Length: 464
Ligand SMILES: [Zn+2]
Image 1 (spheres, rainbow, N blue to C red):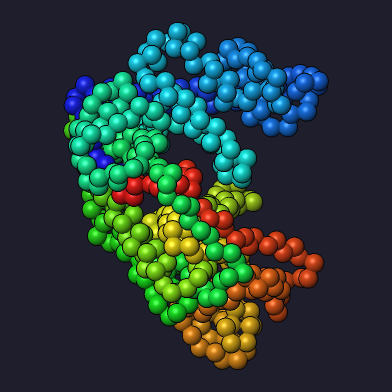
Image 2: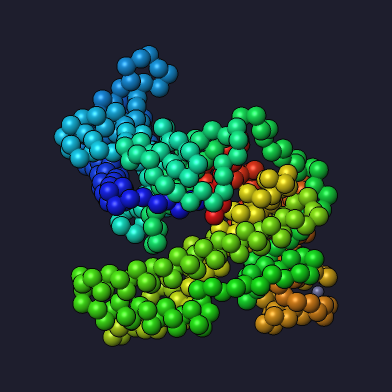
């Protein structure tokens, strides 16, 4: 990630682009939603052509929405265009109808449609439904063509040459594949994706080759507990006492200013900057931690497959049946925990571990986290009362250990059983649950995957 040094014309232009692109993104999303509603909820569901379609993405975009031609011209295997292609094809007409779109580079607009496609794809892969974007969560756009770098200047189509801090020169022989411009609290940044075809792919180690595994138990009091008795501290960048106080004071300053005033804006930037600093520090710390773990002399790294959003879910409301009033449900207590979970951001750390592991030819094995903290390392007894704060005392054999290290060892053992192809370990032994209870194995061996949209040969230098 490089920091850009745009002149005033360029930065106003870029801010303007982000606003237009956001409205374009929302318009495209709304278009698809309208189409879906017309096609499948109220409308002519029984139409022969649309009957076979089960999902809205393959639908064509509404006639009175986008001016889309739903069929491809050539005799393709799948003659129906998908929504992304239609909205892509509609761009020239859109530009005619809204001349201000003309100022934006066309590949940027196409990438914007693609961004919505990716959001839909993620949704079908089990993630959340695409959201309408607002100022805070839509801050970037991507060039895929025409970007050039010369010394400390970068050329961006339609924006022209712009100075930037070339803090890490692009190595020779690499081609620029894409450049993403992002607005952050203290200015504009660019991250560049580069590729060199001459560099071979990383070679993934087959699972049967794995001889040694290290287990990682992710936590809040300590960030990581490793099965070799090591612990890595949690810096608690956002949730420590001092930062919390500073944040509260600065936020109060914002709240006291008159709404819409310049002073309020200034105070708000101040808060934003603090958040940005914390985010940067967290990134740096996570890379350091991931490096520490991956650099260990093992073939594989075992982590829990955590469902963080389920952990952060709100408590169910409790209602007093007589009066109909809401009772305390523990949410206010849970809020603090949720903030701590957001602050450690385990999923980001796991992504970094996966990225570095792939680079070192190591494997990341994700295991089902069930009972890992309640099972005894010594005799395999599972009981919630085994755990007493940080200590682990087995109620059956008296085995004494650090609770989280015990968990890390369980994680390691479970990963070993996956490697050996023994799925017995997945079933809780001696569990009190009824036998016919469904045990869904959520274990999966993660494929060699790198964060972001990288293909094998792409190397991201956007590691800030
Ligand atoms: Zn025991």
